[in-house]
Length: 305
Picture 1 (cartoon, one colour):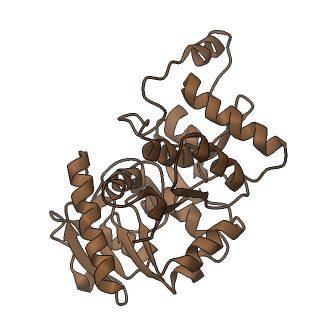
Picture 2 (cartoon, rainbow, N blue to C red):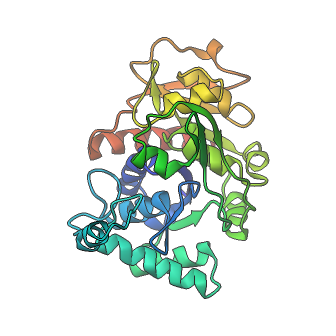
């Protein structure tokens, strides 16, 4: 079954791990958030694109960023000379960024550069950046405007958040084609505001999703985000920090919201419009749990088709 997944860089790759255990790589297309992209030490780092790529290639770390068994000699040497890097970048990971940036400087699009990177890893899935435009997410805080990576790493998510500002990118031909080829879309359990939100800001994306069967996995259980700064970001967006808040954010196109088995407080009447709620185990601590969730989602899609 051909599948289209909208993905950020933490929760959604866990689901992707499960999908890869069930489906052929060639059946998977992933539209990745690029709002986290940042130029570091002369090279473009695409954290979510790379996490997805490394996940499919089987080389990502247990932290869901970077490459396992990487070394950090270059980063440490730079820091020792007083050069600051927003992220701790390993040698193998840095090679990805150098390869990408060199192609971009030669006039290639981010989508084409990503395709060549995937080919270098032997990946047959399609990984599509949400846009070829550089549209970094900026967090408006009590300390001023901060790039999302600096907010997460340098400031350790501590500043008070007033607004999450996502750019509006142009939809690429490749993303438009992928949407046209899929009648159903899965939204992974990534941060709705900062990981999925930038994808939804791409011109024409929300409108396109209205014509598709959309299943989203909530990254919130009861009133607690599974990880990351979702609480601060949802509160800044004036949304309740619940699965109902997630449904409200996706309300103009969402068909099914999957919540955790333990999230008993939410019911169909809490959700907007015609959105259905299904309960599954959404906490994917290991590959088996990822596979089980992926299998149940595929059953939902099969019933719809």
